[in-house]
Length: 93
Image 1 (cartoon, one colour):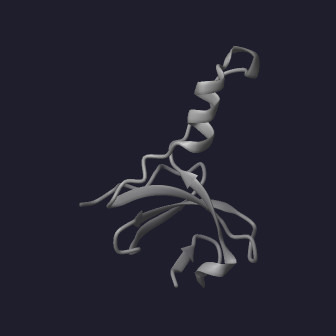
Image 2 (cartoon, one colour):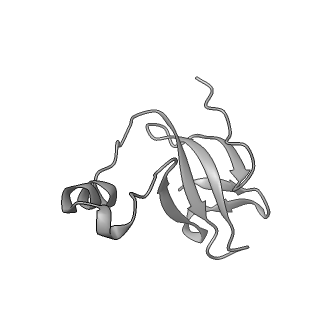
C-alpha cells in the first residue's frame, strides 16, 4: 500500500485517495471540432511509462484537495508532492 504525503494533511494511506491521471493531460478542443479518433485517444490512450511520472491525486477521504505527485511507477516510491497551482515538482533521476 502506498503512503501518500498530502500537502495539507500529511502522510495518509492510499485508500484515502483517488488517482486522477497523468500530468499534463490536455483535453482536446471544442467537442464540435474534435474527431472521434482524437476523443478516443484522449479518453483511453496513456503513455504508461516505467519510472518517474507526475500524476494528479485527490484526497477524497480527507481535505478533498487535488494535488500533484511525482511517483516512480516501477517502485511506487513517491519523490515529491505539490498543490495545484504551485510550480510542478521537478523529476529528479
